Image (cartoon, rainbow, N blue to C red; front, side, top):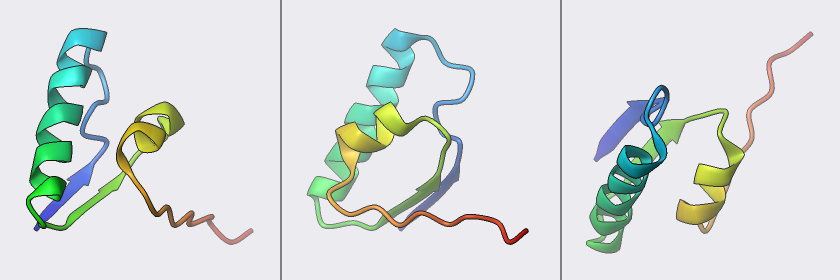
Length: 57
């Protein structure tokens, strides 16, 4: 299981692609990947199921 906080934050496009490929491979092997991010485009490339958590006011 991987638990990550903003795994692509601060990365350029090339290195973001590398991280996305590694995470996709890990998940494809049946492993659990849990991460938080504000980059919705990354989520859409990786995740078949999304849970949004919004802070309470």
